[in-house]
Image (cartoon, rainbow, N blue to C red; front, side, top):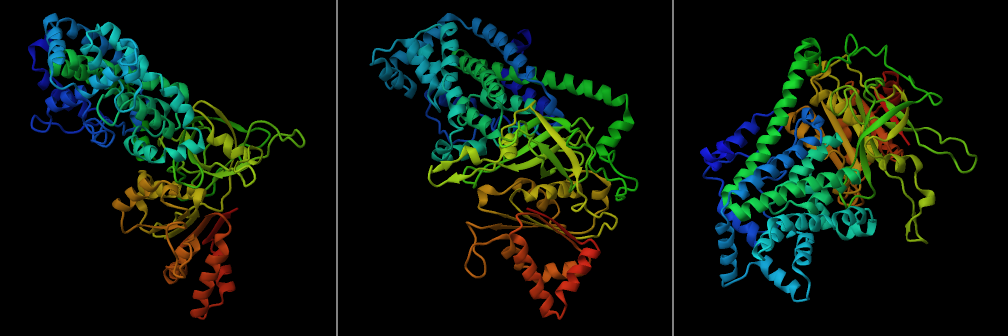
Length: 620
């Protein structure tokens, strides 16, 4: 504590932010003396008059987001250690605050002409004869208010902090478990869709990938006690991320403890206490990051060649990279499947989407190589009711490049829509008719096992020998899966294919509405970086109309560019179709009309495309 007393805590806080900005993948907003004011923050926390919609200083939008896959390996103990160290530091800091200061704070509250909002709420609840501890627990459980408002009220009541803090923490946590379970109800989700949309925006960058990354990000988000964060928003974020219940609860609890300590420090010790608490949290977390980075650097230095290969992402390439003579096919079969472990399962559509679609990352430890455009077979657990035999294999297009989402070459991803059947008589989903495999996959939790076969198929592979080849990719719904692997390989990863590619990739995606769009953030990022090489067109059947005034389906969107698509195919482009087979007749009729106008025999023209392997179809 000597260091803290010798230095300006404000300067220490800013220095800590600067140091953390240098940690790989851990970003903070840029703060200066002129842009960061503490007094309004303290006033808002105590009075609870700040707008719930105000953008918090430490929000996912402004920073505090783990943006590097390196940090995805950070264990939950990082935040736990930070919270524990923070407890010790702040308790020591508060123990040095003279009793007269606390008494003065209570006296000021008692003599105030106008009670704060939290105090008014407390007096109202007290009017029902509820004891002070019960009042604190109720206020802590309220959304928006939470322990940000409850702890100052407890101090105003004259209760010791050793009583106020644990009561407020427990009160804040009481509604979280019911919230996590109630959000599984479809009717409630629809009712709460505006709130969930807001929560999704606030928590959209809380960690996609490993459960450790999600745990750390969520704990930090909940642990900063500002408007827009907190346990309630954290619970909705955990639900949207698809986190396991116990993991979500432990993460939220860690965040609530951190938030409680910070609010206590601000309430009792003013801005010095708040700065000390936040600085300690940041510095302790930084220590863990630096230690982790040091270990990784030392390990990397022992094998420089491996590090260089990983950076270039060429360690899973053929020689030359476009050679398809050794593409792995059916390495694992039905009788001897591969057992993969789920890394994460996340819902990736909005609340107004027609159904639920999940992105599932599976760890195969590098023992299940595949190429972009191939499929995995999934064997759901259990047996068929009619004959007691094991369930048959279901094929799913792999939704990642051969390097996986974490670019380690040890994971693969699936994009799966939960198959349900709406019964008009029951006016609800009929559980007896739900898709067995899709529901199994969408319900998987991190650590769960999945039986896999394959990889299957060569029809959807990309021919990469000519780097100027144009790719036209047409998809409905989860048919987007193989194209995500294509686009990551060509534009996101540092592969030989990406370095050489000079052509144009054109993606058509058809879904019901904007909430049902899949991986839109990824497509927009690629489009921003490569506007000339990547084109993107959506067909939203419930939001757009076609040239005839009807619903805009994928075949209608492609038809808008009929001549251009036809000419690209004439010049050697490859066209891919993946998704519902219902799109095929409309697209083929469109191409036939163009061929007729040009005086070309469509049947012979199509045979020529197939012979030159420019026509790739995988529909169902």
